[in-house]
Image (tube, rainbow, N blue to C red):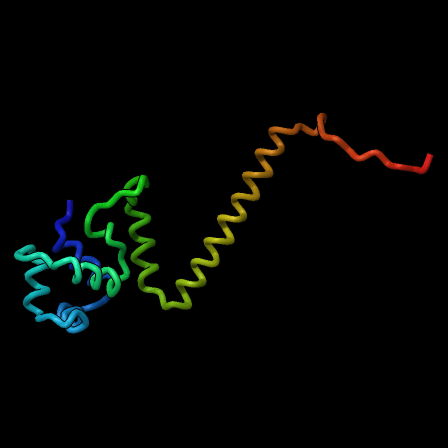
Length: 132
């Protein structure tokens, strides 16, 4: 299991920031950030909140908060890393595509489920009213 310091460093590198750049954004000394990454000290909760915002990670990233989801696979981690490199436009495009795919999968699944529940031999067809 990675330490808090290792996770801070990993998230910083994923974002493409140097220690000096992140320390500047946090309004702290570079040595303070280095101490966090080396697990010599730990940031207080206010800095954790800032780190999450600046590094675009949820608090669970630092604290191993599981929400009933299985651990992320290495393939998913690779996708997350690539996603974080995208511009806002690229991220929006990925999100839109994912929404479309999820909706498509739901429709296919729904159609398959309905086909199983209602075989064509039991389907009801409307009766024509020919006026007689």
